[in-house]
Length: 497
RNA sequence: GCCGCCUUAGCUCAGUUGGUUAGAGCGCUGGUUUGUGGAACCAGAGGUCCUCCGUUCAAGCCGGAGAGGCGGUACCA
Image (cartoon, rainbow, N blue to C red):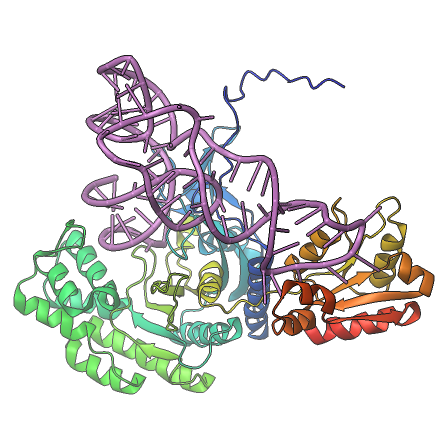
């Protein structure tokens, strides 16, 4: 057979293609996949227990259904991934699960039970610069209630968010759900006499950075502006020192307990109509959280929480992982917010014209899983039992043994490579196999199998000093009659789990 | 998007004033032993020195442009 190269005019002219994935689209392997699936499972079971029903929508939506991005200019892919369908209409990959829900609710409003309560999980896509724990394709797990106007519906989301965080694996004082309301933020904005929308945005964005930049950084952003470490300058809101002080006093009104924070906020925010509405809203949420039995430590009122700027209309909340995460070099990695939500009363109205109050919460599964992976909280999984193939002319014995194990419900494979015994043991080791099973001529003649407990073997090997001795010792290894193989292997596999 | 730093083997890095065939350690693959995972011994594979253009008799090294990576910042519906 002669190797004939196909002439492909589109192929690169020289050598190999680069084996690489686009940034922000990481490969996910066994450990992470399993951890994420488990996390989704736990979070959705919380949502189900609170009475939410499942809904899946497709990856693509019409671009205009997703909101303000109408990709009619030169950059149709700013923020979202968009492409033109056969019929020339622009479609976009969903960037969250809320906008598709709003579309679905509007489309099916007549027939839905109202309020409509659904959960959803799946990948979403954002065309942004990735960072640690930040991807261009990532998993979210949401719950929303559409058609519920009262603050107790928001409180339900908040309490459920805390429960979801716990279910996902965050323990006591390893996370906090921070809660605020847009009404108080609006009250502060009008309190300092900021009138134009641009200044509003700048002030809100500055507040949002409270936890990261601290008081002085935020003060700079509220005033003249701030110079960052790289020498880049961010223009400030241009407030005078007195106004800056007022805004900061509000932003720092957070206290130990929700009750104390409410009091401090009452002082900081003044007596306007909007301020009172905001305080009433938080007070109602506090009362409902009480009724839900939500632990004081899980949920805090924090006036510096802002969240995204467009569609939230009332309470906003954010789940933050407090546990310190260190990367392999020992540097602190800032994962930040791992979930968020709020009230969005105008989102469905975009389709129906009718105002439909809605509130929801989203857990960032990818981010949470990244945080857990970085801090070493994802356990290595056990691999399959590996049956070594010791007879290269005829692998039948190995195949038969593997089949026997599988039929007994044990995850097992026969070695399929072409290498000798040593590489086969290395393979079993690398697969994380709890057990290697050997059936060679000797064993067949004696009617036995040799079983090696790889975890036990590794343990014993640690005490062995010389290579020769190691080879002699065959740690963790024993013979068993063929008839007892399944029982003995199962014993070890179960102990390893 | 803006600012800064970086780019030689899978990884961590050497590479002299520009001068034969670009190296090491670790890792990987295998063999020694068609029967043993590590830290023994032996061997092997693996490089468009990020790319292109320029300077030069000669470029991993010098100049320019671009790409990619990392960090910060902005944005995050």
